[in-house]
Amino acid sequence: HTTCRTVISMNVHRFAMKPYPVPLLLLSFLMNSRLIASFHSSSSSSLAIRRPSQGIIGKVRNLQRGTQAFTRLFSADGAKPHRPARVRRKKKDLERGASAISSSTTLEWERFDYDTSPKWDARFEDGIHLASSHDEDWREVEKRETEEDTELQKKFEKLHSAWERLDMATIQRATEVLMPFINETRWERVDQILQQRTSNVKFMFENPSNPSNVWACLRTLDSFGIQDVDVVIQSGMFKGKAALSQKRGMRTAMGSAKWLTLKNHLTVQNALEASRDDYHIVCTDVNPTSKDIREVDWDASGKKICIVMGNEERGVSDEAKAMADEFIYLPMSGFAESFNLGAATAITCAHLSAASRDGKGPFRPGNLTERELKTLQLKGALNSIQKKTARALFRKEGIQFPPEIPL
Image (cartoon, rainbow, N blue to C red; front, side, top):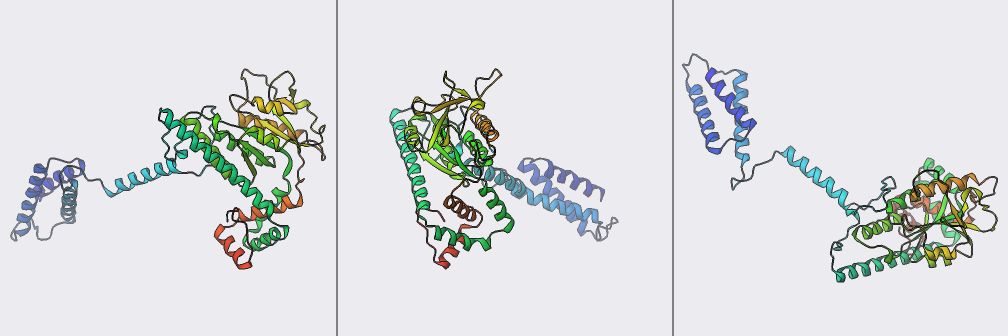
């Protein structure tokens, strides 16, 4: 009994601790098998092996498990060790998580990278060989990027045009159809926020180099109740693998801001030409004619306000400066040369908010037209319900939407 326990313990320990060479493991297994068989077949043994204790049975079962582990330890070719199922599952989970991080296109406003030269992000890679140094490859890349930027601009134009074509009756009817299927508390919150939106101020971002800065800015503008945002994405201004990768991120960021009215422009000239009739264009720039933001009379022009924020490194372009009506700067007292784009946007919004009182100043909460408010309420309802449910309800009620509006 003692000998059996000792030999089994030794070999179970060997099986459990480390993979011994095959001949040694096989020899140990055979020794254990013969020893146990001899004890078990001896009916006259004084050790009463006929009714072994639970300890012996447990050791034999452990030896059987060790034998099974031994057979799984090597594959058919005897070269590659076998990993336990728990280890394999853990490895698969890690690989699946890494794959989700690298391939995910779900981009959140909370993920900020404030660097002016952001690192390349694999989430924005789509198979283009950006690492090539050949001029022909780069020309092909730039051509494709220009085409995608143009497609995005056309997509936004068609989307805005489709919403403008909807008549008020359809907008009202569609909202009423969705209302019973939306949580009452959520709808009250959505409606309360939309009632405080302002269209008297909009921001325009000219060729920002880092999409994380854009996400931070969009979050800030949404928090201050600013509804309209313009983004200029000029293809020729982005050079290099990281820059092109981040520019793709900006396209994704614009699509993720579902509560804002975003417009994309291919050049700053086109953007400002479309705004100069209705907006007083104010560029953020430091020059001899710039005013301290605390000293600006925001009601002097009698127009709505368009704040132009330049690139993180280059600032606003000469084209934007030539079309500006006024220049402002943010006062600084430290050694830093400038604020980060996201910080500058937040500080500017804080000054605009502080200058708005009693229906005067740049911010005019709740100044949306009836059509603008009803359209935003319908968008809010669509954002609060599953798309397939909305499609089924509209189909049942015979409500049709233009194909450009995603449902």
